[in-house]
Image 1: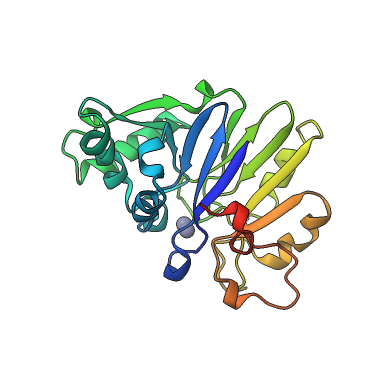
Image 2: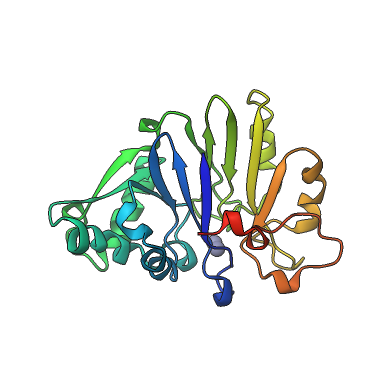
Length: 231
Ligand SMILES: [Zn+2]
Ligand SMILES: [Zn+2]
């Protein structure tokens, strides 16, 4: 299992690009989120040609803003007959994706196809509905092999949900990539002080923040400081 981030910033941290991850799991290349800046990063890194599946956490621009460009890339640069493949955690989320893409592509199913996340053994979608923003469907994802577990929060807004889930899993090497906010008034992202103690439990990394705002008492290692985690 391998993970590289195409960006580690939040919606307004343009210097660090929108948070998005590239995960190699079960022999597949899986892109998590396609925010505004992500298609550009995919072209810069050469990864745009290698996407097997796309996973989405929620419908904020910094997570889906360049989705249509990524979808069309398949058709125009790879193979006119090739459709982008999106893994979906539920029927209603699939419908939301179709509706969203429909704004720019009149017939979405000409360009993309959907598969349930269950077709990838060991991939679990965690329903985080309403935790990030009231009433908004959001999803976190967990990748589990015989050897290890990797969890990706998306914009979760609840610093405990992933760790409660991990208690139900067998003990094995575990890495958690968690959105981290340094602003107590933020309210929609997980505050670093509520994550600090987790570094004693698992290998934890923070993302979706500007490292220049990092307070002195932050204990959550930030993805952007680890070159091996960056695409
Ligand atoms: Zn975000
Ligand atoms: Zn968000």
